[in-house]
Image: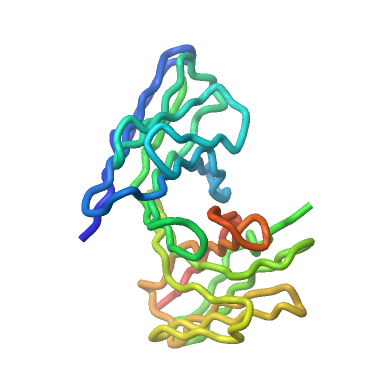
Length: 113
Length: 113
């Protein structure tokens, strides 16, 4: 069966510090991968998606970046965090796109101080 | 511009009653809609998909309808239980079809014993 791992679960970082969140998927090949951010009480905002190794599409301009160094690894990074980067970050995978359901990790709660 | 709207106010119902949640969309015609459940501090979990040519889809106590005239999808939980308490998100594609999903803000359901 397929599983998705996301870590860390909770992170507190000072403003201006770097960020690296990692997501890995097991049990499937060539998944579509997604990074979302969810502000408190709000819907999910798609940040990045990837349909293959090294292929990243950005949905919103920001100081975040994403990379896919391996087929089932997706990394969200920042060189300098802003207060507005606080939120709940979710990684997801799907078998292709279109109607395929997305399967989410348990998220990372990021607080910027 | 395209919009997805779910009632941001929590829905409180008594155990055993039917819960009905609404998802309205404007300025486009999605080919399908997905519904997800999200528990606090967790990632969303896929529940059901309904296509534009399907008026109704059922899964155990869940029923989803898709009215392309009203531009609305309704999500019903019959014989509701306290364990059904969660936030429910609707997610159509951002365009009429495609690889991505656009998530509504979700409606929080509280089922009281």
